[in-house]
Length: 421
Ligand SMILES: Cc1cc2nc3c(=O)[nH]c(=O)nc-3n(C[C@H](O)[C@H](O)[C@H](O)COP(=O)(O)OP(=O)(O)OC[C@H]3O[C@@H](n4cnc5c(N)ncnc54)[C@H](O)[C@@H]3O)c2cc1C
Image (tube, rainbow, N blue to C red; front, side, top):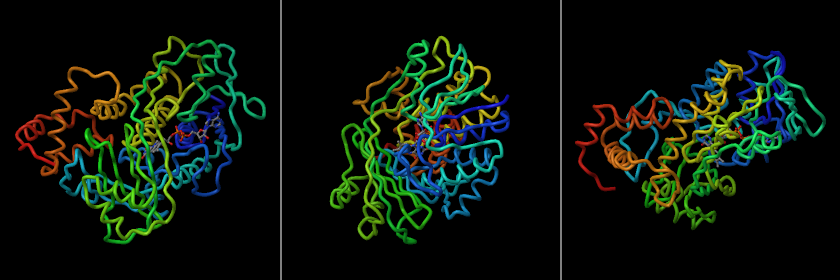
């Protein structure tokens, strides 16, 4: 095949470019923003100013796409830790018992991650990244023939939409007569506030994660990052909004289950001002359910599915899609295959959101007993490190949800004493 055009040079688009560089003679990535020379946040990716976690499966997938990528992150000063031994997890308010594991965690900022990926993609001889170039429509004569841009038209045998959450693809398809794209929406009303502090050895563990749960619609997370920084993000859902002033931040931190963030904030030195962002809903566009779609079209990343960011899944799913794209080169029934990549993370994230009675969405008969089991599971992980490790493998997409339901784990959870927070 000759030419593929990708809309958007954020993580999803760059990974798609890497994936297609093997099958296409030429790959062109078109980005609306003026791209920075180094690791910097930018307008088209407002979440780049917010804390990002990279799931263990995501770092493995990046290393598959770009051999040596993890070593390069470490070389750029990204700190590494053990996901289970070095992190303080609070699940439903219960502190998870820590233990050594083989699961790594990396404290990388979103701008550095995107920069490292962008430099790897720039080094591919048949990939060109053009910035300050907005795609305004699709060229179509029964199949997709390329894109229209602010400067003219570009022909392509394959067009990949990686335009993110605000992708224009549903609008363009409607204009071309393909009808409406079915959408699933789960409204949680997430509000994030992110701020960086100076890292001081011994003052706080590698990461602290207070997960929200029914009755506690708040989250507070710290992660050590490159540049001797600790990022703090406070999050609220369902009408809870973390404050940005110092007294309010401290009061919010004091309300979290774990004491670590509160203790850290007592003497921590802030390095910047808090930045706030709202994410009203998780949105999944079901292209796989469209009765017909034009040939020569693929969509990846947040353009297809933007998850509740609290679970940190977006980059990992984009990387898994890129691995799938490198195998299929966008041929065959792409959207059906891509939907399968998203089914598990989407159902894990939305099932966790639907634990909150205020969140509207379809609930199945099995959800109630499953939720009761998982509530007990989270409490039991406070003293059983195998349960904690299995939970982290599943939430980091290293294993499927059935991993939490093996006969041995079922038995230990059901026999575990009921614990109060
Ligand atoms: C607050 C928040 C926190 C998050 N935290 C995490 C986390 O901890 N871990 C994680 O894995 N994920 C997280 N995510 C998700 C993650 O940021 C995305 O999954 C990731 O950026 C991949 O998205 P993308 O490349 O598909 O889209 P985006 O990152 O949204 O990028 C879209 C790109 O397309 C460009 N573009 C759009 N339209 C056009 C056009 N018409 N022409 C040209 N260019 C165009 C934009 O300028 C932009 O560069 C978070 C998201 C949010 C909102």
